[in-house]
Each structure stands twice: as structure tokens, then as C-alpha cells.
Length: 318
Image (cartoon, rainbow, N blue to C red; front, side, top):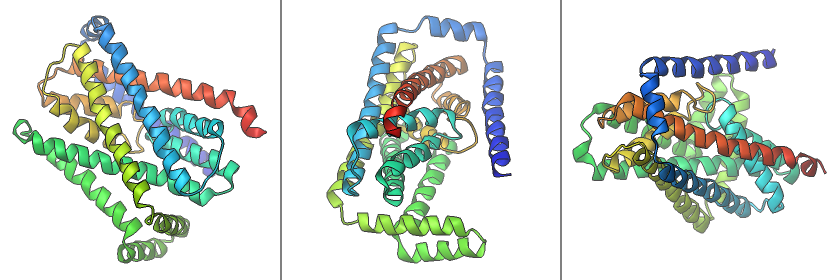
């Protein structure tokens, strides 16, 4: 029955991704869209592609830093395989965090430390989410004069509120006990036990101040690279707007694509790019072209991650 529910859920999210893309393509002139992509500055496109690769390198070292703090020992090849598998499945499972479960299970089966590995993956995501809020908040502060719409401020308010709730649930004893009691009253015992285990593991981690600062620094750098990649990509398409727009919009777009309503954020990412960049005066066809090229980058790296994951299958079994 559970498998049937998962299949239905997967098909629903796949349908949402397809429906969103079909809807978006109907909103633009296909010939104009193809012309925009054909006329892309290929040199800038290549630069954007390689700069985006930097995020995967930084992300790998960020996770490795957390694993070292928890004393989860694994060969470099094994870590690379788990991380690469995560990248692949992030693009083909619901939301952009589906691959996190894959790398957790993969490395936990090797290290025999499932709780510790799960805690590192959660903290890895949490560090990135904190950086999203910080980067977007600073960009809005410096770019206040160019932001005139409530949707941006409302979006920031929502993702900030979610962050505060998560931090309280994990790090505040009073809030944690209240939330855990609520989960128990709702007959969500499994979720409650999972929260309890993670709370205990993360509570131990709070002593690792240097690791926390280093991890957050890498996360801030990653969240700064994302807007720069999209800015270069936009320049390749002829979009010339204030770079602050990218530092404001991209973190919000990244937070929205975490929602488990589509496959790897496909469709949802393109829709939010069009919505937000329309507020900067960018036409739908150019915004969609930029979003599709960005998604193309993601799928190339996901494909490479999948190849690494498959070719190391025998090594992982051994």
C-alpha cells in the first residue's frame, strides 16, 4: 500500500512539472524563445557553466566538514559516490532535496552511523537555508530602492518564518518539547522519534563552533555563486539589469523549489523565475530561456553524478 501511495505521489508531482512547463510554453512565442537561445553568447554560457560547477565542489567540502565533526570516517571515493548520487536524485525525485535521503542511506549503510549521517545531511541543508535568508535579506537591504512589490517582501517573510520555526524546533529546548508533544498528540510517533534523534545529535554538535562558522561561510559563498551564475547566464542572453535583482530573486526562487510539489523543482523553478524577473522588466521569453538553460546545467551535472554513482556501484557493494 505504501509503495502504491509513493507511486501515485510521484506521478502527481511529475504531472505538476509537465503541466507547469506546458502552461509556461503557451505563454511565450516558441519561435522567439528558440531565437533567444540560438543567439546566446556561447563564451558567457560556458563561463556560467563552469562557475556553477564551483557550487558542487564547495557543497562537497561543506558536507565533508560536518562528517569530520561527527567522526564519520569514509574513503574519499565513497563520499564522492554518495554525494554524486545525491546530486543525481535531487534532479529526479520530488523537490530538490530528494537526493538527500539517497546520500544519507548510502553513507549510513557504510559507516553504520545512520543518526550521525542523517544529522550531517540535515545540518548541511540547514546551513544552506540560513545562507539563503541572509543573502536575500542583505540584497533587499542594499537594493531597497529597486524593490517595489509586496510579493518579494512577503516571500522573504515566509521563508524567514520557516527558518525561525526550524531553528526553534532543533535548538530551543522549550519549543522542541512543545512541538514534540504536539506530534505525539497527532499520532505522528515516527516523526516525533525522528525529531528526537536529530535534536540529540545536533545538540552535541553545538560545541563545534569552528565547524559551524566554517560551514556557514561556505554556505554563504555558495549562495553568492548562484546569483552570479544566473547573472552571467542572463548577460549571455542580453539581459542587462541591476545585479542586486539576482541576489534578491535567486535565493527566494531556490527556497520555493524546495517545496515537494514537482520533480526536482522542474516547472516550479521556471515559473518563479518568470514571475520575479517580470518585476525587473524582463520579458517572459527571455526569462524562460534563462531558466531553461539554468535547468539544463543542473541536469548535466545530475547526469554526471548519476554516472559516478552507477560506476561505483560495485565498489560500494564490496
